[in-house]
Image (cartoon, rainbow, N blue to C red; front, side, top):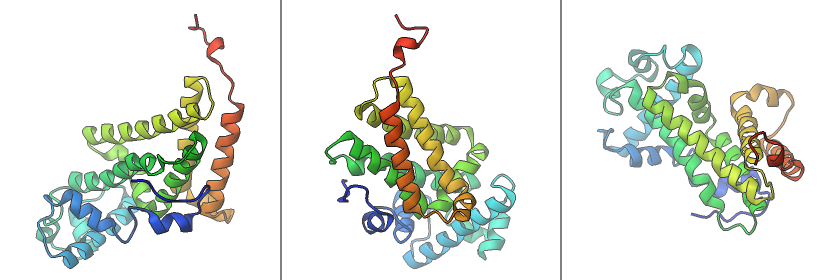
Length: 242
């Protein structure tokens, strides 16, 4: 689906049309993981899932996801073990649900801006969309970044593949915006991704500077435009060039 937004849209404008947000996130999870969730009462499912995810993020921040147990989760949510099993069968199930949210969002962001007229506009919108989604779902993005090392090997691969897919989407737009060298474009995309990750992983730095999410997005947009404009064509300089 395409999002109808003006050029250089703000966080407030994005929130009004974001397909996934705090108000519909639990419905989204139930829709995608309904087979795992045996509780069918919508109000109870929403409330208990909210407790489970909130407690998971707090425990992961305190003791690490690897260090927390389902009993810890029961204690923090007030659910019995049997009640918890109505939503997840294991910690791996829980991690898979959280990772699925971020993977799905990451794969959808490029599609939201396909109708924009130029590659540079799509690049700017994609960067803003990613930054603003990470603001809406900050604990989720933070968890996946910090706890991916604790996930089973298959899920680690899924997380890495998702990150590389987003980087490739950025790289293609950077090339379409005028960068001739594919390696330069890939490196620029990797730098962009690292800068964006800084926003949701190290929030304290930006709070100290009193930087808003809009100011951060504007800064990243300006940085990337400057980078695209100044990147040289280094293909002639690489040793393997023939």
